[in-house]
Amino acid sequence: MTGLRKRVTVGFLSIVCLLFFSGMVSFLELSHLSRDTGEILKANKRNIELAKEMLDAAHEQNIALIRLSVFGDRLCDSLCRKSMERLENTLLVAQSEALEKSFLDSLAFATTELRLVTDNYLAFGGAARADSPAALRPDSLGGRWYSEEYQALYGRLTAAIKSYMTSTQSSLVPRAEQMKKNAYRAVTPVLISLAVMIAIVLMLFYFMSIYCVTPIERMNKGLGDWLSFRVPFAVKGDLKDEVLELKEKIESLINISKQTKS
Image 1 (cartoon, rainbow, N blue to C red):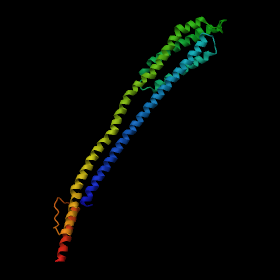
Image 2 (image 1 turned 180 degrees about the horizontal axis):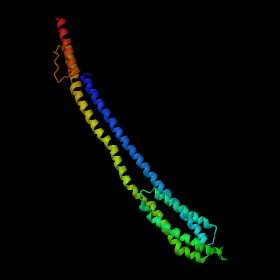
Image 3 (image 1 turned 60 degrees about the vertical axis):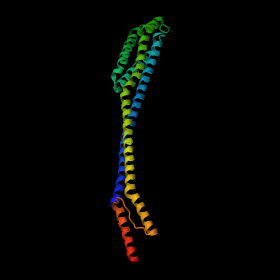
Image 4 (image 1 turned 90 degrees about the horizontal axis):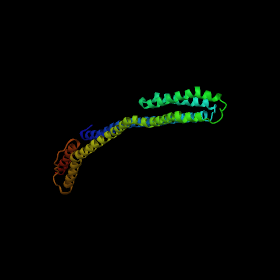
């Protein structure tokens, strides 16, 4: 590969290599960014699903206990136990999947309190209520028990579930900050490569003008002057490689032409 071709090839290959390198780095960073975004959205969706499941179970258990304690509907006994188990099982799943388990401490405590009060009522208050002649009539004692003891615990439980649903978002903040850094890292190589490519293109333009375009223009003008006015062919400049060879060959042809005519 000769000099001029080599310089042009090296210049354009440098641009291609920079484009390839910056593209690969940006692709990797964007892949990381996409994966982190997907994980954050998935975790957020999962937390909301678990919180909804616990709220549904707590609400179902609350309705069943109202019908049991106030209206004496013994058919709700099994539903009450089943809803409580559903709530506890969902809490166990949330604890196993949580990145920061401290957010679930208050929820676990509220669930345990509700379980103890519910079991105590089902074991003693509910059994005594079932044996009474007024088992199918509204019970003022059961209503007072619900409003004075159970309702406050139920309120604390639902508040803890809602707090869990919102507080888990704070654990996503560091990952969101990391995503922001990944976005900058994905863009930075492209910007650096763009600046370097602009510099290379300007340098390539400069050297092409100095060593190729300008000498060819001068030789073209000198050859035209010689053909038209017999002005001596004298091209000055810093000529190299193939351009210098071309100048020397033109001078040789002119000398041969002069010798032939003489």
